[in-house]
Structures are given as C-alpha cells and as structure tokens.
Image (cartoon, rainbow, N blue to C red; front, side, top):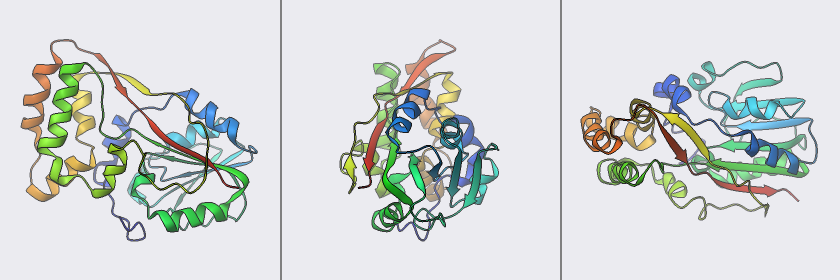
Length: 251
C-alpha cells in the first residue's frame, strides 16, 4: 500500500473493529516500556480506537495517538494523558527528537516503509524504541476450529487479502526493519469468546471486507457452515491469538 494515499481497510465498520479486536495483555506494555530511555512522551501510531494508547498512558506522562481515519478516531476512548490527532503515519506533525517510545499495534505492515521509517528517525530521541506487533488471521482454539478458520481464510478469502497482509502471514519475519533489533515480549492474546464473537471478529478481517467489496455480499453462510460444526455446543471457549513483533532501538 502506498500509505500516503491511505487505503483504509477497517473504517467501514469501525465500531465492530473496536468491539472485537483482541485486548493486549499488560505484560506486553511492561516489557516495551522498560526498554524506552524515558517516560515523557510516547507516540501510538495508527491508534484506531486507542486501545494500545490507553495502556501506554498508564506508564507515560503524555501520549500522542495518531490515525489517518477520522471514523476510527471518532470511536477512540478519551483519556487525560492521550492526545488524539488525525495524521498519516509518515507525517505525524510531532516535534523532532521528542519521542521515547513508538508503538504500532496491528498496522506496520500497511505502511509505506521508507517514508515511515524516515519519520521514525526524525521524531524518536536518541535511544528511542519502536515496538510493532500484530496477530494476523491465525486463531487457535482446538485443531478442528483452527482448521476451519485456516481453510476459510485460504479457500474463500484467499484472493481478497491485500498484498501487505503477507507480512502478517510470515509473522513479520520478512518485514523490512532497519533498526537495532531488541528482544520482544513473549506474550499472546487470549479471550473467552462465543462462536458468534469469533464470527464477528472474522467479519472485521481485511480479506473479508475485500470479498464483500468485490462480490457485493458477505460469505457469512460459508463461514458458519465451516465454523459451527467445528465449534460444538460450548457457549464459551478460550481463543488464542499468537502475536508477532518487531522491536528496535534508534541509534
């Protein structure tokens, strides 16, 4: 994606995106905050509804949270330490050399990397830390449910995933990252979900919205036909989203 043109995959139903996005554990933020050279200012880029920004604000004096989508920011949760701004990732408007920690939750793969990394070097202070993570479309419940989700993502949504999503599929291993890499936290996301919760989460995927845009209807019957028999009768099950990271220091 040429991020300067901003291809928005998520704002059409930003309320659903807010409700069904996994919640990141406190241990994630404790790890990355400990790497930062100070606690004065953090930047949460592509903040969406502000989920990561709110957690970072527990550790910092001030957080600037930017997003290119006005619709996403309209659903962001207010916080006295968080200043929400509409801005492209590579043009934040943040003062040069002022940021101790930059966080990017489930978004770095969408950015125009060269332009964004130039902005990272501009705004981070010496020794500042950039921490990016994502969870992609991999979901772990049990082998039957996992297989149903994998096959739906590949066989039904396969042609409709944006090309940048391949970085998620590779666990960010192939994602360019020109910084001194640091040890990432060893955490994943878990949630207690109903089968309807999981269906609603899948409906927020960029591949799902791509299918709808191309075909004019949702593949909801196909999703339910695969997922419901695999889920069984349990009202709630533990769903795990494995996280992958890129964490680095600007030197």
